[in-house]
Image (cartoon, rainbow, N blue to C red; front, side):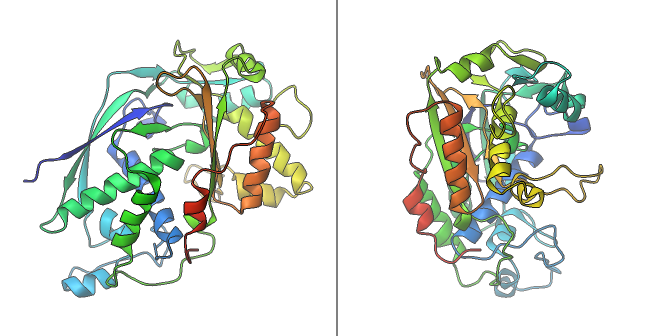
Length: 366
């Protein structure tokens, strides 16, 4: 058996991977793999190749009778790597957890029982006394199958590198969880090219992507550097906890206030509120961009968010905080979001969009 390939990651905000009763005190392989597949599909579509929707009727399927060349023509690159009906995932993931646990807590400027505080206490009611995983983890990658083992490992490294550069890992990244750094990560351009070279082989399934699928061809990302002495940061440091207060100073779990509505500010402050004003109160358009919660426990009828906001976090040896915001929308929405954050934190300027040239160079994609 081939020795596993170790990949070391350092979390910047706690990882949420779910589990029994929604408890996320341990990083679970299934939750990590689910987020990896989601990002891989978005990347594949962004570079102009096809990735199926694994929850749709048109998802890839094999009956187990296909020969090798026939099999690949029935699989999109994402299903080849992550598996589908009749085809096993091409790798096994083992996660060596660190022992660091963080008490579940979120921070809001609203007082207990009011506004954002009430809402967070309601939607996270089952999690208020839970712990979250935080710190350093080792992902051990075991390739499965006889062929292309080194190629599979390269795909996983490239994928995690891209997620580290412009996204997050695990669930609930729209609520600030899952920011991470990765040891020996590839630069963004090389990682994209590794996946592009692998996925545009002629043998994979060729179809047209659905226009509403998440894709890096319709993507933007900003990272803001915010001084610890910033007035809003200081206000957050003194604000109200939902859950059990943590002693950690490496992050401030404030994404909800930033994403939705900053309490005690002018009407329209906060990303969702600003977008609501921008589209003249068109609630359906707001729901399309910021999502809605499911109407039942089966998670039916919910709309996934296209805007993602990290918590404020610190990097190693940095006293400043950072805020990572990204979205799968038209660029004008990203412009609006970046300007609103500049105004929110009274920053001198808006940073340049991360990897703008590389993202703009994506061809095709839907």
